[in-house]
Image (tube, rainbow over all chains, first blue to last red; front, side, top):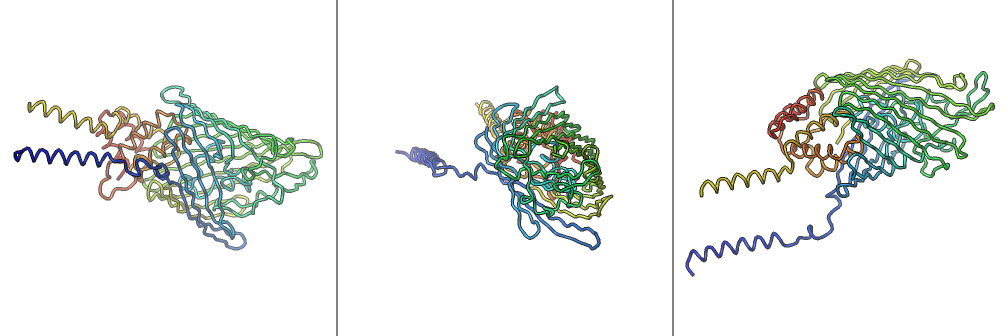
Length: 391
Length: 129
């Protein structure tokens, strides 16, 4: 064998050995794959300073973090969950904001089962995370985030267990119909034993001063004394009645410049299936260049038993928000108004008007520092600073 | 012989490039448009470089359920993000603090381009400063 042949043989041998070694099954290839390989950790958090001056100056620091875990099961299934850890009173609160399985196998339809954010309006489902919300607290329509009892507002950020189906229907090249429909456990009647702790969770800045008449006896001129039942959303996972909440939303989307959503739901909230709760929501958003204008209005009709029979308590509220970017700075103005709640034209809950003036500084696309002064025309003004981050 | 060898090398290079990106430029351009149209409806556009390819595929599935996107739109957005995340920002660059809308306009414009490099250059320059 000459020298050239030996060289060639050595090269062939080296290549063969490398190929065989590369092809040898390793543990990672043949064994069970780590679930972490399909898992993504995301989420958001914030720390908030809040101060009010009501008789005496009260200030408070609070913090919260909401990790989101996404687990992809092939191309068609996704499990996603969001936990929330916050500080409230003297305890650390934990909550399960959502835990859902999504089926993504269809071209235009998504099927979701589990505990999910209800597509009622837009803020509740998409805008409440602190790094997305342009203000340190929620608009006046929404109270304690992520289920619970609406205090000083119309409802909490809604999250409930059930099934949700979404359908994306294109109208033409520019416009899309965004359709959603859900069935879920629905709200429950809260007994006084079940009531929330009354603390201002996670710095949403809404206290109870305007909510005192919900879940309490109210004296009126013609309706005598009325017991207004308090309603809890997503706080009990044993359904309290045979009824389920049915809801839907229709959205007209011309992304990213215009969006309009009309949503509504119906549910019975008492154990005997007598008392209706009906909600309606109109949400709009306009975006032109660095300007953004959004608003949302809610009508809530809660059936109540009075001495004269069954009557509806009507509650209406809305908010409008304008923001404009100037490089890293973003001034924001928000006007919120809860109108008087009435039963048979009798006022059972006073109105509430809030004007919030804010200035955000975006350190990064997902890290704002938000400074806000909120004027309460019927109560106490509030000053807040929040440092939020999304990851 | 030399010509044939050169031709083979060029073809091999193109094939490898295509495999690396796994998508055609038109789909990536559509993905850029879909990204600009949908992702900024609720929040600031996030840097594609924040995540690797696998993460973006999972996050896009999450966002599909949230924003009610179609399967095709989602696939194109993923293709776009997976291509973009291979690009290093300029020294000292960070996520843009400027108007999201200026980013959108630039990316939409870039989305019309057919060449991958054009899309890349425009989007990066608009997204970072």
